[in-house]
Amino acid sequence: MSAPIVRRSPEHTADVVATFAVTPRMRRITVRADSMRGVEIRPAQDVELLLRDASGRRVKRRYTIRAARPDTGELDLDVLLHGGGPGAAWGAGVRPGEQVQFQGPRGKLQVRPADWHLLIGDESALPAIASISEALTGRAPALALIEVEDEGDELAVRGHVSWVHRRGAEPGTAELLCAALADRALPDGAGQAYLLGETRAMVALRAVVEDRGIAHDAVFVKGYWNRGRPDRLAGRSGSPELSPGSRRP
Ligand SMILES: Cc1cc2nc3c(=O)[nH]c(=O)nc-3n(C[C@H](O)[C@H](O)[C@H](O)COP(=O)(O)OP(=O)(O)OC[C@H]3O[C@@H](n4cnc5c(N)ncnc54)[C@H](O)[C@@H]3O)c2cc1C
Image (tube, rainbow, N blue to C red):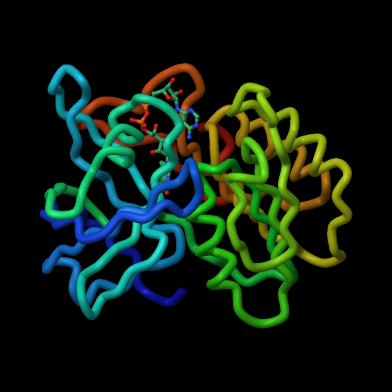
């Protein structure tokens, strides 16, 4: 929680050392880079993988560092297998012994002190939500609302977790999470919220979160993907990152 924000974004070459099916739709890729030895990671920081799309064009895709082992330079990346985009295709097909380039670590999210914490997101944010909840020490409760396809996507997450199942509905809309939030009792005191997932859905949720009494400045919104369109192409950063208090994506 106390590691400093790294503003530069150095490039690394990593060896893929292991893969593991965390759930049927989430594959853990463990990479090792000597240049990551000794680098401490804050919760929900990510790396930007330098990949190629089906036409061979360079693209960048961001993945949360689910766990880091600075003694060995290893990072665990949990990749959602949601389709045939370059990120998901890499996650589905990569094998130990291959190499991957990435930049980072990146990410401005800071876990802030509060009376309680509310974590909301979809399955692309599961690695971030899990790592944030593990970093929340002390007595402030962590509540999580996580939208996934069904029980098969669920993972162990610390805190009071409500799973919201789409069961065939389109991913990346705000309706199910908004309804779940409306039904959810929230503690007294000053809460801090982290909204991580499809960009427009998370922006829509901000209004609902603020209606439930969480101060505007205590809401961190981060777009992780954009429904109906691929992440931006090489040379651009990923989705918008809204610090507490920001109003627009
Ligand atoms: C800071 C940050 C951290 C992230 N951490 C993770 C992580 O740990 N694990 C993870 O799996 N993802 C994570 N993401 C999200 C991931 O970067 C995006 O989902 C990315 O678009 C995947 O790239 P792709 O090449 O597979 O698909 P793209 O080429 O970007 O998109 C292809 C199609 O798939 C759709 N699509 C993209 N993402 C999703 C999705 N999640 N669910 C359903 N449809 C989708 C798009 O709308 C598009 O129609 C993170 C994003 C950010 C910004």
